[in-house]
Amino acid sequence: MQKVFNTNHLEPWHYSYVLEENPFKQADEFIKDDKILVNTAKEMYKSMGWDIDNLPVTLDLFPKENKNSHAFSCGIDTNKDVRVLANLKNDTYSLEVLCHELGHTVYDLGISPKLPYLNREPASYAMTEAVAKMMQTLYIKENLLQEKLGISKDLAKQLKQYNLTNKANFIQRFVFLFKFEKALYENPNQNIKKLWYDLSEKYEGIKSPQKQHNEWCNIPHFLSHPAYCQNYLRADIMAEQLYLSSVKKLGQLTNNQNTAKHLQKLFKTGSLYPEAETLQRFTGKPLNVEAYEDIFKK
Ligand SMILES: [Zn+2]
Image 1 (cartoon, rainbow, N blue to C red):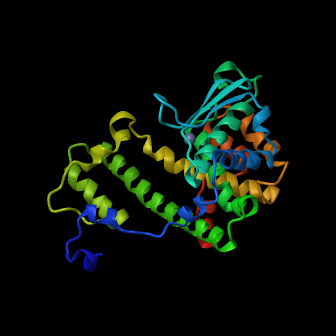
Image 2: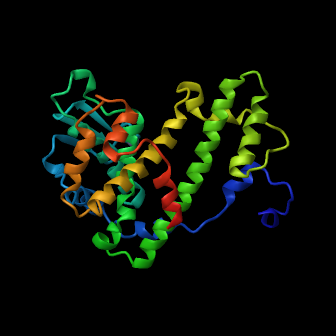
């Protein structure tokens, strides 16, 4: 990069110019229309034992004027009424979004209506995110695009590899954010700009600019949702733990009619037990990074 920019002092903004080959662009070509996109997600869920068309879920999936531009799944009434809003396009990113949101949906629908009213919700924010994150990557992990859309074996391999690189970047980023926020609360009177850039260099390898700014304020969670960023990292770790323990029992999750029944054991207890206990009951182990480490060893 120093050669490309003809400088021996790289600034943080140089890193955003790194050009990369993204195999997902090639895979996007196979998602030719809305129907292929939605059917691929629905077929994935059907192959695990959930018939989305016959569940009490309302889908509003494509953009229209004055519509909220985000994507979310909202449990209005446990077991009876879940609604998904999204703004999908014909690409793999949208497939991932849809598979993610439907993960929240099946969790909400799986919570037992016999639970006390206040426990009729997922075990925690991080737990429902963990389930959604696990669902969003299944189509890559279990080669669904090869099977359903006919992408080549080689491209399927590249997608997996690219996802793994993204995962490594995600870990670096969120360990950095987590360490920063923790240090911020431990000593709010320190030089916060310096703390931000020191940790960025340590965890992301990005050198500080000569003039330091309050760049940390760009992360909205630090201002509006204190101590929330760690949820994303914890959810990601739990997603791999849930996946590994399920795969050990089921072989694979897609094309397996036992999957819904198996995950139902996790969903049905809602928030009856704290997150840590829910995870331990389902996977047989406390929160740990064994599965997280495993994915990088393959
Ligand atoms: Zn989510």
